[in-house]
Amino acid sequence: MDFSFTEEQEMWRTMMQDFTEKEAGREYTRMCDQEKHYPQELWEAGNKEGFLGLLIPKEFGGICLPALKTSEGHEGGARGKRSPRSH
Image (tube, rainbow, N blue to C red):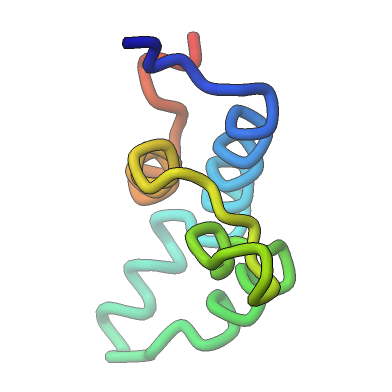
């Protein structure tokens, strides 16, 4: 089986990681945690980038990436850094 990313999947993964590094750094997440603040503005910004529709079928306005590939992008985004596979 070939588990490598397609060009489109790599683009989305890189965009998600870059977005997370820029918009949801340690200071921001620490502030949200300490102030018990729900990051609504982060969700709205992520929605504008198209991240909330990655698993949604195209006929419903989503992008429809495979779940396994999307989960790797989420994992890298959650860490706020590139995964080892991207080097």
